[in-house]
Image (cartoon, rainbow, N blue to C red; front, side, top):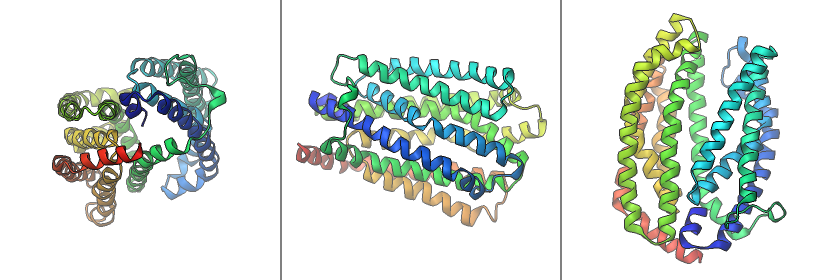
Length: 376
């Protein structure tokens, strides 16, 4: 929303959208904090969390939920800065957050012997400081995205515009989380060693998702600004360029992660059985990262132009729905870690194909232009 206002040169729209976004963070963050703390034990039991790690898991999550509002401030503030073309400061603040997190991990876990609670508090404190840095930068800014605390309130038109794009994206993200939890439940049923190996793969797997998400963030802001400025040809060219960059990056990272995996895993555990299992799991989905590039780039391009409903529908049916079906019908027959892991590349391929067809059909662009004109 803010990138579209920025592209159109609507300073008043940017100001109202910024203060509405921060008000939304405060409200939703408070609700999620309370609900998250209350439902932690129930949600972990729902996931079939092994009893021998139940206490640690409950302790970690409840502390983590304390940092919900600062985390939302960091994400929202970083998104606002990127929407107006400032991608450097969020990076600097994230570097501070990561370095601080490492330092506090060492201090709390090794120095103060706080175990899991120490790791959780290290994360919360580092995220809180990064959130403060982002908000402070916005308060100091002289541009139209400047944050004035006394002006934090909801503006109806901007809130509706945000919800129109944000709610489908939020539902999509929630469905991702639900299906991943269902997959985690299936993994948990295979025993603690498999859970440990699956967790290990997420350490390296997370490197790709962080980089892939950056392409999604970039193309959303770029398309949004060009859509607001009515430069539709430039908007379409950017999608092709971003897609090529994302696929190239995915190919390189796939090779590196598969090669470095067995060495990197030794940083976390010394159990060779767990390491061998983690290396095997990586081969089931890492080579197929390039497929995800189509979903990441195209879906976020559509959102940048204001088309959020159909990307949500395609993703929920193509990825979430198919994964649930896979867990129900395939996993009981193919009841091992490979059978669980293969649901990722299969659902990626099907969903990516649908997104390509939908984008090339081109009917979404006239619809977005009409809606934008009506909104004015």
